Length: 325
Image (cartoon, rainbow, N blue to C red; front, side):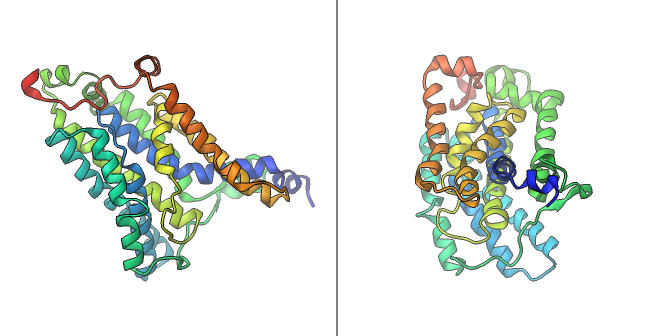
């Protein structure tokens, strides 16, 4: 066995490799939530959107007969569309009807969650515990998969991982270097001032909530098309809630979402990596670590002091009423 193979079979490399795999759905969902929150809309329905995206992506995987590449593209597109449709409901309630954002998001998550719409669709479409026909496979980029450490971690991942990196770069540029990105930040910080400058607050919030829902749906598709390989009720395992906390953890910055997603992804992958290397572990304890970290983050920002220190958008969660300007 070569030195490179020996190094790449170590526990550390295994955890790092799987951290990117398990962190990718978190990254997609967190980037989507970040867009919504930057516009001033808190979306607590991410978990439901991820689950519906997961089940609809798997439905396309089972029903469409074409090449693997075509099926996977259509499946991801269907997941994005499903998440966007659900987020449209949330946007209508909180932007147009000015409903409480927390109540609307929680209601949507319950409606579409593990005991709601997603499970109904999975059972009605006969998708439960059926093996997938098409799955995203790791890509050996430039033939560098066998390079020690960085090979399997960086150069041997699926297209979804690389797409999430590209999306992060696009969003960094969008929010910091484009007029539309600066406008959405203005809408999230001071909608009164943005409206006075001629920016359509409602339009920006609608668009970014829909984009956020679409990305949450794609995050859900990562589970059924790349990680688990099948559909079961609650397949995302609460990843949507972690993604919401991750946005806070990342200080509402896309580039830091990458760090947070892989940190949480590593915590999720750790018990499987330990078992794969012969360690006798209690999976329940290790599987709880991401959620313990999530609670810690939420507690940290529960006060107004925390919100200000971490840089939360000033108008986050506050409905905008033009007449009160």
